[in-house]
Image (cartoon, rainbow, N blue to C red; front, side):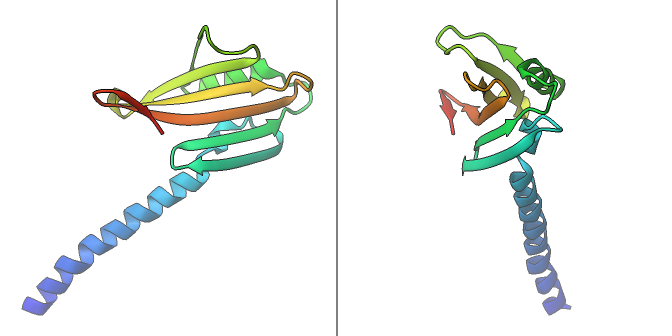
Length: 133
């Protein structure tokens, strides 16, 4: 009985860790899909860090940047206006984790080709100061 109990005490935490890790890995690999407007063409997602994603895509016929912004709003993003951002770049934010984390998205439109959208995603954490990763 002692060996069986010891085996269970070691195996159960390892199993839970493996399940949690698999879930985290699955969520991380799919992160970025939510930034792309359904029906878009030539979508690319680049992960440059744990919490940094750049997605680019081409809008389908009949769609414009307003459709992309409305899609983001429908998924919990709130557009904010900043004074130091260039024209054609829209800033959207969303709070998570009881206000301790804030997701930030910069959605930009190519000046020459208004169907080309680039979305840059980052996450900021609030502690005694704000840190974006």
